[in-house]
Image 1 (tube, rainbow, N blue to C red):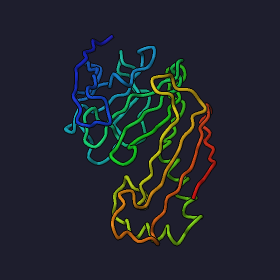
Image 2 (image 1 turned 90 degrees about the vertical axis):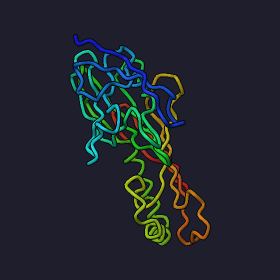
Image 3 (image 1 turned 120 degrees about the vertical axis):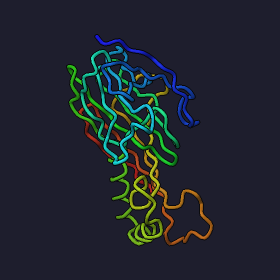
Length: 232
């Protein structure tokens, strides 16, 4: 068993806790540690993250990993945008675990919408599957919005071209969950997506490109997604 140390790291975002504790040790790479807010109920697992931007992969390679805290053994890399212990415009949110430690919801916040929202299934010390809930909800609401109003969709996509990777086809898509605050994660898990083409209310933004849609989703214990209640 490797020794571990816990250090306090201050964060600059009001959307995350003012202070996050980082569990470090020789079992982890230099510059990385497990966010204490990501630790499983039995204290066995947690999520590894870069401590600062100096250890962040600028090429976008996923760096958050589900690990066994005592040994540093990697169960799986989380296939989503990396969350740092300290980052601008968002940051790592407390992970939600099921009471038996078999599921964890990993969340990284952003300025306008989440950077990562991933549900992970763990069984017998191994990751069985992971679902990128952010991407799944984004893809579904984009497809339904495009089908419902193809002309406005095309106009909005053109108007917002170049907005960046966090805005698929130029839209702002906020995805949230109905999980209970400060309680264990339970499944099926309800999700809600809201799509906007003009979230800032820009003066002169053409009406022909304004779209606002909503969609509900649900994921069950087998990782199956269902969708309903599309509002256009």
